[in-house]
Length: 374
Image 1 (tube, one colour):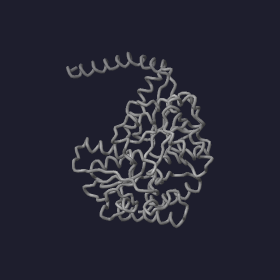
Image 2 (cartoon, rainbow, N blue to C red):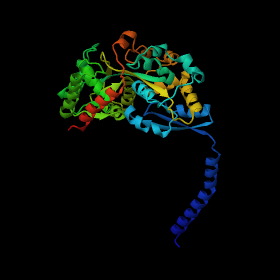
Image 3 (cartoon, one colour):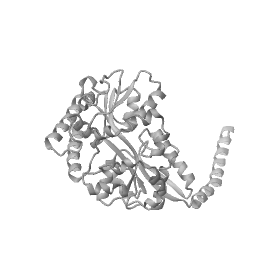
Image 4 (cartoon, helix red, strand yellow):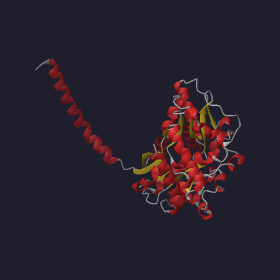
């Protein structure tokens, strides 16, 4: 046997001995882990990197299983998987309430929420049905909120300062001069919302003429402009300079700016503009009806409302916090920015998405036709 073969054999023996020594310890560790599982289902890139670790340290009886989704519509069909906490948007919350897929919260277990939630969220019309809207906060707690506007490179795209005209702002996404250089969310409500807002229509219209016109705008855009569809991947494309403009949630603007800085792209002057009549939305923490760890779910939701945790999450994610104490800790430049924290006048010009069976059916049919077109 050569020296090389002897060394090879020795390494194999040592590897086997190491495996034998470690295996019982691994089995013992698994067997002794008596922590209760807490299964969280959240949007991608939507929580600070150390929040889960901090929660597990504060509540060592729980082991968090963390999973992510890209949209409300991709989350919805997976709700049979026994998640303990989910974070859908406002219109989806209303749908889940109607379908008995989420349960009422025990507010006595959520003292941080009671102490720190902005009273603004008690007066929002979350649903066209007033009775449904009035009970939303019995089932859901605001986690983050945002507006939907346009991010654009001001070195390439020119938009008049202080304009809120949706036709001027969204028109960038339908301009042939920007072919192959614009981004659209691969999401039914957001893309339909952009097209409806472009024409000045309600984001919840059921008027067939208005809906057909909005659909045709998206069909023509796909054929003639070739937009990049996506969600999280759009942020990277904008930061890399591959796109000159994109529909964007306000929180993504902050994240993109950070990525531009990381990449050293000094040639990009990225800005965010909010059209009048556009969408603002609230993502909310809920407990599904089939949750297994209800106590742990309440403790996690309450933990998210600790001001320090809420501050860390909104600074990392870039979205707006409904936690008034955390908001006061933010830099003045952020908390006084109307695109992130709209004043009453700005809020009055915006619209939430509503959800009902007719809206879901009509909008999905129109959007699916756009997606299937070539």
